[in-house]
Image 1 (cartoon, rainbow, N blue to C red):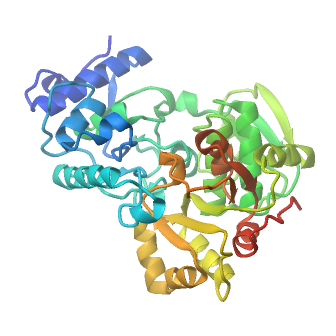
Image 2 (tube, rainbow, N blue to C red):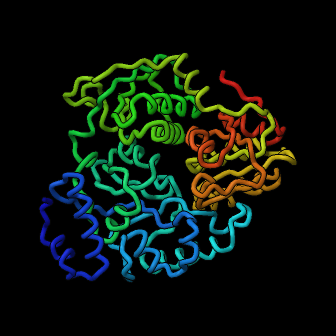
Image 3 (cartoon, rainbow, N blue to C red):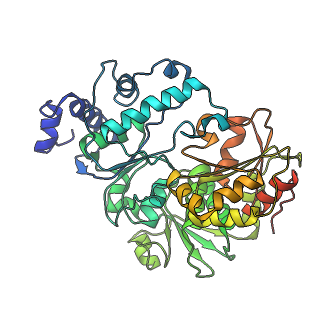
Length: 425
């Protein structure tokens, strides 16, 4: 049975209100199911509140009732005063400002507005992004967090050296209410050690290559902790690591990894494995790269209906690059171009003129969401081009789409010509 500290027992006894009491009830059940012996304090939660538009949900516009039912797992209506922990929010069911462009129904818009007001009232931060580390949520090494979003979790663990497991709505919201999370999994040092050695025998040059590397290793390693040994010691940038994270969490479930000489807990191979011997040593070369690429491309018709890029949300650098690629060009009349980012970064893009360039070309710079979240694709869309291995992995199953995967440049070429001409180089 989980051991409770004094403040945790007080919350469970209802001394700090019904909301914290119900949250602790859930967390105690969660901890006991996991075999956790105690809780750890957290003041950093990335939570999911922008509900999926299930038909039965849309009929409920009372946000307190929604939160009670879907985040606190009770038919009792519990009114939350303020959440306790610092927090950011994952993507929402639609672009909160450009929902009509997505083709979202008005009933969904009304639901999101209800949740928006609820969030402001209760102290939930409306970051509305799958990349909280790009908009100010940057925990320090060793900090205990409670993050949702599969691609953000390995960024938190591996890139920043903070500590989190992959949380869901029913654990992250109680964590935000109480400032507590079970001490298990990647909160514990022994579980962060490397398990598999990946000898990368080719130069991983650009974002697409990092996606392909992550996708191949995720498929092979699943929930393991891979340790990447690069042939060429070239430090990846934020967008490259973002791609590695998203791909490895899509084809597998990688939440933690090490890159020798790059990530904070892996200055050496010895440090990365921390006493472990590799369970397996794998090779990643040209044939493995080709295999990952072919697994991500399923479209046969070269005519593209939608170019969807920014999954995970584009960085400011990527917004600059895509604006430069579109400058002076026009999106083909038969193609829809959606570019996704956090609205905080869109504000900077607005100031820098990137948004105007994209709009003049006929594209749309979108925020807050992603079609993978709600299956809101343009009407009649059959073929999608994307520079995201995550989007390429999920779109066939979620939206029934045929997908081309390639570079940003290849995607913009498809947007302006209407045809896919990308290939693996």
